[in-house]
Figure 1 (cartoon, rainbow, N blue to C red):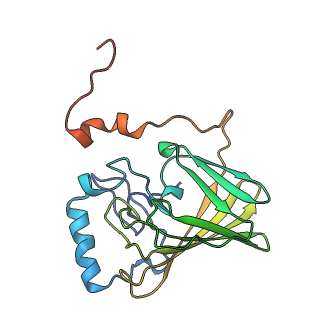
Figure 2 (cartoon, rainbow, N blue to C red; figure 1 turned 90 degrees about the horizontal axis):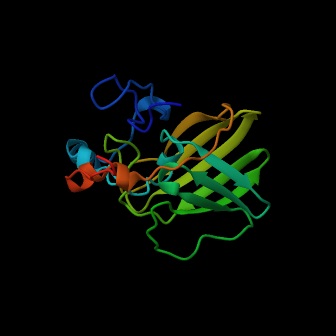
Length: 213
Protein backbone atom coordinates (compact mmCIF):
# COMPACT_ATOMS: atom_id res chain seq x y z
CA UNK A 1 0.00 0.00 0.00
CA UNK A 2 2.88 2.38 -0.81
CA UNK A 3 5.25 3.21 -3.66
CA UNK A 4 8.38 1.73 -2.11
CA UNK A 5 8.83 -0.86 -4.88
CA UNK A 6 9.29 2.05 -7.28
CA UNK A 7 11.54 4.01 -4.92
CA UNK A 8 12.10 3.64 -1.19
CA UNK A 9 12.87 7.39 -1.05
CA UNK A 10 10.36 10.22 -1.70
CA UNK A 11 9.63 10.65 -5.40
CA UNK A 12 7.49 12.66 -7.78
CA UNK A 13 5.16 11.01 -10.26
CA UNK A 14 6.66 10.28 -13.65
CA UNK A 15 6.85 7.74 -16.48
CA UNK A 16 8.53 5.21 -14.14
CA UNK A 17 5.63 5.17 -11.69
CA UNK A 18 3.44 7.08 -9.23
CA UNK A 19 4.58 9.53 -6.58
CA UNK A 20 5.60 8.23 -3.18
CA UNK A 21 6.45 9.63 0.23
CA UNK A 22 9.26 7.18 0.91
CA UNK A 23 9.69 4.66 3.70
CA UNK A 24 13.26 5.37 4.90
CA UNK A 25 13.92 7.16 8.17
CA UNK A 26 15.46 10.55 7.41
CA UNK A 27 14.67 10.23 3.67
CA UNK A 28 18.28 9.52 2.67
CA UNK A 29 20.57 6.53 2.13
CA UNK A 30 24.14 6.73 3.49
CA UNK A 31 25.96 5.42 0.41
CA UNK A 32 29.72 5.21 0.32
CA UNK A 33 31.01 7.45 -2.54
CA UNK A 34 32.12 4.53 -4.71
CA UNK A 35 28.85 2.69 -4.05
CA UNK A 36 26.80 5.73 -5.05
CA UNK A 37 28.39 5.65 -8.49
CA UNK A 38 27.19 2.07 -8.96
CA UNK A 39 23.70 3.08 -7.85
CA UNK A 40 23.70 5.72 -10.59
CA UNK A 41 24.78 3.12 -13.15
CA UNK A 42 21.99 0.84 -11.95
CA UNK A 43 19.46 3.61 -12.47
CA UNK A 44 20.66 4.21 -16.03
CA UNK A 45 20.17 0.52 -16.87
CA UNK A 46 17.18 -0.10 -14.64
CA UNK A 47 14.81 -1.36 -17.35
CA UNK A 48 16.93 -4.46 -17.96
CA UNK A 49 19.20 -4.74 -14.89
CA UNK A 50 16.51 -4.74 -12.20
CA UNK A 51 15.99 -8.23 -10.80
CA UNK A 52 12.22 -7.69 -10.97
CA UNK A 53 12.47 -7.01 -14.71
CA UNK A 54 14.21 -10.39 -15.07
CA UNK A 55 11.70 -12.22 -12.85
CA UNK A 56 14.29 -13.20 -10.26
CA UNK A 57 13.40 -13.46 -6.60
CA UNK A 58 13.40 -9.86 -5.28
CA UNK A 59 15.06 -10.52 -1.92
CA UNK A 60 14.35 -9.17 1.56
CA UNK A 61 12.98 -6.66 2.39
CA UNK A 62 11.76 -5.80 -1.13
CA UNK A 63 9.34 -8.69 -1.48
CA UNK A 64 7.44 -7.30 1.53
CA UNK A 65 6.41 -4.09 -0.25
CA UNK A 66 5.96 -5.30 -3.81
CA UNK A 67 2.37 -4.84 -5.07
CA UNK A 68 1.47 -8.50 -4.51
CA UNK A 69 -0.28 -10.02 -1.48
CA UNK A 70 1.27 -12.57 0.84
CA UNK A 71 -0.02 -14.93 3.51
CA UNK A 72 1.56 -15.61 6.92
CA UNK A 73 1.29 -19.11 8.40
CA UNK A 74 2.51 -19.43 11.98
CA UNK A 75 3.49 -22.54 13.98
CA UNK A 76 5.53 -22.80 17.20
CA UNK A 77 8.67 -23.86 15.32
CA UNK A 78 8.44 -21.79 12.16
CA UNK A 79 6.66 -18.87 10.55
CA UNK A 80 6.12 -19.34 6.80
CA UNK A 81 5.31 -16.51 4.39
CA UNK A 82 3.68 -17.44 1.07
CA UNK A 83 4.04 -14.75 -1.60
CA UNK A 84 1.99 -14.36 -4.75
CA UNK A 85 5.00 -12.96 -6.63
CA UNK A 86 6.69 -15.88 -8.48
CA UNK A 87 5.20 -18.24 -5.86
CA UNK A 88 8.04 -17.44 -3.45
CA UNK A 89 8.05 -19.12 -0.05
CA UNK A 90 10.04 -17.88 2.92
CA UNK A 91 10.75 -19.88 6.08
CA UNK A 92 11.48 -17.99 9.30
CA UNK A 93 12.89 -20.47 11.81
CA UNK A 94 11.74 -19.65 15.37
CA UNK A 95 13.05 -22.78 17.08
CA UNK A 96 16.26 -21.22 18.41
CA UNK A 97 18.56 -22.59 15.71
CA UNK A 98 21.41 -20.48 14.34
CA UNK A 99 22.16 -19.44 10.77
CA UNK A 100 24.06 -22.12 8.83
CA UNK A 101 27.77 -21.58 8.38
CA UNK A 102 28.55 -19.37 5.40
CA UNK A 103 29.27 -17.75 3.17
CA UNK A 104 26.10 -18.67 1.30
CA UNK A 105 24.52 -16.57 -1.46
CA UNK A 106 20.73 -16.98 -1.41
CA UNK A 107 18.23 -14.72 -3.17
CA UNK A 108 16.01 -14.49 -0.07
CA UNK A 109 18.69 -14.97 2.56
CA UNK A 110 18.37 -17.16 5.65
CA UNK A 111 15.81 -16.04 8.25
CA UNK A 112 15.97 -16.77 12.00
CA UNK A 113 13.29 -15.30 14.25
CA UNK A 114 12.68 -14.70 17.94
CA UNK A 115 9.91 -13.07 19.95
CA UNK A 116 10.39 -9.86 21.94
CA UNK A 117 7.02 -9.45 23.61
CA UNK A 118 4.46 -9.09 20.82
CA UNK A 119 7.13 -8.37 18.18
CA UNK A 120 8.60 -11.00 15.88
CA UNK A 121 12.25 -10.05 15.30
CA UNK A 122 13.83 -11.68 12.25
CA UNK A 123 17.56 -11.71 11.52
CA UNK A 124 18.27 -12.31 7.81
CA UNK A 125 21.75 -13.02 6.39
CA UNK A 126 23.47 -14.99 3.59
CA UNK A 127 22.35 -12.91 0.60
CA UNK A 128 23.41 -12.78 -3.00
CA UNK A 129 24.39 -9.29 -4.19
CA UNK A 130 22.04 -9.45 -7.18
CA UNK A 131 18.81 -8.02 -5.70
CA UNK A 132 17.80 -4.38 -5.36
CA UNK A 133 15.68 -2.47 -2.87
CA UNK A 134 13.54 -0.82 -5.59
CA UNK A 135 13.25 -0.05 -9.30
CA UNK A 136 15.61 2.96 -9.13
CA UNK A 137 18.68 0.82 -8.53
CA UNK A 138 19.16 1.17 -4.77
CA UNK A 139 21.19 -1.93 -4.04
CA UNK A 140 23.35 -3.88 -1.56
CA UNK A 141 26.29 -6.27 -1.51
CA UNK A 142 26.63 -9.86 -0.31
CA UNK A 143 27.44 -8.42 3.13
CA UNK A 144 23.80 -7.39 3.61
CA UNK A 145 22.14 -8.08 6.94
CA UNK A 146 18.49 -7.22 7.56
CA UNK A 147 16.83 -7.14 10.97
CA UNK A 148 13.05 -7.08 10.60
CA UNK A 149 10.45 -6.34 13.27
CA UNK A 150 6.82 -7.38 12.80
CA UNK A 151 4.51 -5.90 15.45
CA UNK A 152 0.77 -6.59 15.46
CA UNK A 153 -0.75 -3.13 15.92
CA UNK A 154 -4.42 -4.06 15.49
CA UNK A 155 -6.61 -6.88 14.19
CA UNK A 156 -5.98 -5.87 10.58
CA UNK A 157 -2.51 -4.34 10.37
CA UNK A 158 1.12 -5.00 11.31
CA UNK A 159 3.81 -2.38 11.82
CA UNK A 160 6.86 -3.42 9.80
CA UNK A 161 10.41 -2.20 10.38
CA UNK A 162 13.56 -3.27 8.55
CA UNK A 163 17.06 -2.17 9.55
CA UNK A 164 19.71 -2.51 6.86
CA UNK A 165 23.39 -3.14 7.55
CA UNK A 166 25.91 -3.41 4.72
CA UNK A 167 29.39 -1.99 5.40
CA UNK A 168 30.48 -2.54 1.80
CA UNK A 169 27.80 -0.17 0.46
CA UNK A 170 26.63 2.08 3.31
CA UNK A 171 28.48 4.11 5.94
CA UNK A 172 25.98 3.23 8.69
CA UNK A 173 22.82 1.17 9.27
CA UNK A 174 19.50 2.68 8.17
CA UNK A 175 15.86 1.77 8.72
CA UNK A 176 12.63 1.64 6.72
CA UNK A 177 9.13 1.50 8.23
CA UNK A 178 5.61 0.93 6.93
CA UNK A 179 2.26 -0.57 7.96
CA UNK A 180 1.15 -3.85 6.39
CA UNK A 181 -2.61 -4.15 5.90
CA UNK A 182 -4.78 -7.23 5.90
CA UNK A 183 -6.73 -7.80 2.69
CA UNK A 184 -10.40 -7.51 3.63
CA UNK A 185 -12.24 -8.17 0.38
CA UNK A 186 -14.38 -11.33 0.19
CA UNK A 187 -12.53 -14.50 -0.78
CA UNK A 188 -9.09 -12.84 -0.55
CA UNK A 189 -6.43 -15.40 -1.47
CA UNK A 190 -3.05 -15.88 -3.09
CA UNK A 191 -3.51 -16.13 -6.87
CA UNK A 192 -1.18 -17.13 -9.70
CA UNK A 193 1.57 -14.90 -11.09
CA UNK A 194 3.85 -16.49 -13.71
CA UNK A 195 6.36 -13.70 -14.05
CA UNK A 196 8.54 -15.18 -16.81
CA UNK A 197 5.60 -15.88 -19.10
CA UNK A 198 4.13 -12.42 -18.55
CA UNK A 199 7.45 -10.62 -19.05
CA UNK A 200 8.91 -12.79 -21.82
CA UNK A 201 8.82 -10.05 -24.45
CA UNK A 202 10.89 -7.75 -22.24
CA UNK A 203 13.34 -10.46 -21.16
CA UNK A 204 13.88 -12.20 -24.50
CA UNK A 205 12.82 -9.56 -27.00
CA UNK A 206 10.03 -11.41 -28.76
CA UNK A 207 6.32 -11.96 -28.50
CA UNK A 208 4.82 -15.29 -27.49
CA UNK A 209 1.88 -16.34 -29.65
CA UNK A 210 -1.16 -17.00 -27.50
CA UNK A 211 -3.58 -19.85 -28.32
CA UNK A 212 -6.38 -18.70 -30.61
CA UNK A 213 -4.52 -15.56 -31.77
